[in-house]
Amino acid sequence: MWQGYATLADMDLHPGSILQIDTLLAGIPGMTGAHLILAEQPALVDCGTQTSADTVRDAVTAAGLGPTDLAWLVLTHVHLDHCGAAGDLARAFPGATVVVHPRGARHLVDPSRLVQGTHALFGRLSPALGGLEPIAAERVVEAADGHVIPLGGGRTLRAVWAPGHARHHMALLDEGEGILFAGDAVGVQMGGGDLYPSIPPPEYDVDAALATLDTLERLGASRLYVSHFGAVDDPSESIDLGRRAQAAIGEAARSAHARAPGDQTALRVAVDAAWPPDDALRTPEALMRWMTFNWLDNNVLGLQGMVEREAAAL
Image (cartoon, rainbow, N blue to C red; front, side):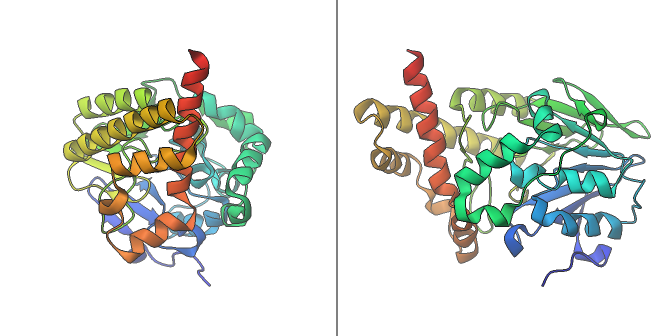
């Protein structure tokens, strides 16, 4: 059984003193990453599921940080695959302040509704995710758009609101290094394949997502990390790919719903025809990672929720 990281050599060191930590979601490498910024005031961007908490804690410790050394735990959003370990890590690193979008803060203080809703979605897969331990309200900072997190030595991390994947989603820009942590806004890459959109229920909004990609592109990042998983080859090209994919998928979903309201099969067929997932699933490893948590099925549910909301608003 995996016992966590034992040495710094087990992690990937990237430019700008960034350690990429594989959270080993469900014991599978390459599913979900957390990123540790080794600055004067170290910050951990995202932290994986509660079931990954020991793995991430051991990785941070192996990087030389003691219980009081981690200054910031910054969450791109409060889906359990990104924030589930936050409560456990807040307890393990009592000096860390937790930074989150204002819409997500209440779910960290009282996670019961978030956990219940997530478990309802994932059903029998829920034990692989775990829950979320509550975090004291006084340790949670609500990040406005543009909120600056000091890392020491003049280095800063800027919050950039990035809705679309969820209303409470934000990206983080390491301004001095030009490194962008995009969360799920651009898409996911599961190894050996292209980026593909992540479109989960209950809040996906294609128009907001496309506006977010325009915002992220204007940041001009020299390096870009996605939470699932790792650095992309070319930030500008990847953002453009995400834009074209989400635009095509969103239009296909709207057209399918107009023709056959409520027909999930018709919606899936239309979406797959508009932007086939084949290029994202070129390797057995990528296919296995996508299938483990039924993420393609969840995309259909996310799109169905979006088009039904839009129809109800007419």
